[in-house]
Length: 368
Image (cartoon, rainbow, N blue to C red; front, top):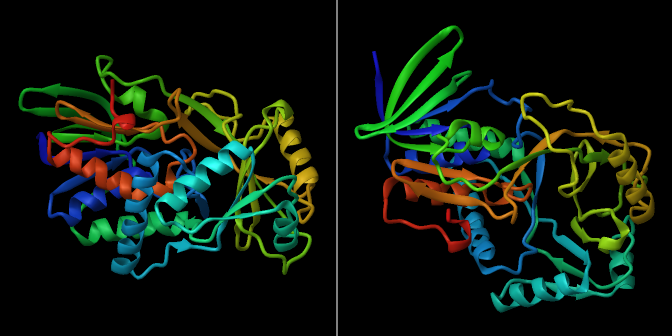
């Protein structure tokens, strides 16, 4: 028998669960399929923490971040799970970036303070600064693993149907809906949905039909690591370091993760990979580059204590997200290692696109 549903979400990572929650809480019947087991570590949504980073100058990202803050608070209220830890964010390095972010935040009446290198070093003794730093106190981290649990709990509370170990093997848009072939174990079935939302991360390109106008998505394997603080009582913010490009380090981000240390990562430097054939091991040269960075810029961390993490980035060439609809297919993709903070807002945008074919995301997120 063919199963029919009004809304089908493909992929139950952060963005898929957020879309499921947003559709279900609006009263829609939604089915979500995930090819892997619950809580798997093969994509980009696992782990305890993500930066809740507001260091953006572009209005479309700041608008999305404002919505995300509202939706994170709503999710926390309805599930009883505090999801944000706002211990502040320090951004340093490129003066042009700092000036642009500072101007954008203050124009929106967001709190942001420029500190000298001496002031910043005095406050955060575990870090080194060689120029002004921008401190935003209303940023910090998202408790990522807790957020996934809260999104699923919230969605199921509104009667969403979420099925793990259900892999989509074919997708075809027809006049009567979108036909999806699904494999669960040794059995294959067909589901026809009025609207399909694809939030499949690194597997997005392989699910959408070849005619779908998706921009190039590049999948890389990134290897941030947790490092042990040398002084347990030291204060750690979340941080961005826009390093001089001549240093060949790459931009750096990080945050404290209780019980695991301080997470430090080089942004978008990993090798291009097939998401089904990853090594789950850091590239030795990149691991050494990260160790050297920590040794130079993080005097409060033991540079030789790295515990690496493997995750995928799925990036467009511009690192902008894709949030758009064509026909009966909605796609959310290309979250480029900076998407998690926006999760419930992305879910709201994708749900809006699914229920209203006249809805539009901000122009930089649209398909061309």
